Image (cartoon, rainbow, N blue to C red):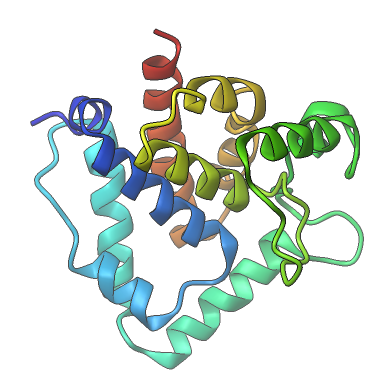
Length: 195
């Protein structure tokens, strides 16, 4: 079956996709995530299924090898953290206004409060981090909340393609595959939630 069609018609699968993507962008992959991905390849008959299988194949190559996991941790840091501007920014405000901690973050915080979400005091990242937004979407989809379409349109649709495109052009094989899968899933969501 077409992976995009399957995702668009199955809320449990949609929520799972959001959870996996959130985990991929929240922190470097650990052995548990790599193992889960390595066991999750499926038959692919479209671009999205192919992107998923590529990510799973790369996870299989990493396996439980501490050296390979360490390289992925280094790649994560090199891509998303640096003194000055990182190679790929994961914050919505950056793409929507050109700076961090700006008006889009304030709007997001208002919307999160209206939805009943509170900031975890132990989390240091601003709420407009891609991983945080993906996690919110996972919860909204899992709970069948009608607000999911509006939340996606306001806080992900305007900018998710930009970091995905930057990662797809990067030399990190694992994060290129993660971005390709993320871009495909979020494109499906954009179409689904526009209805």
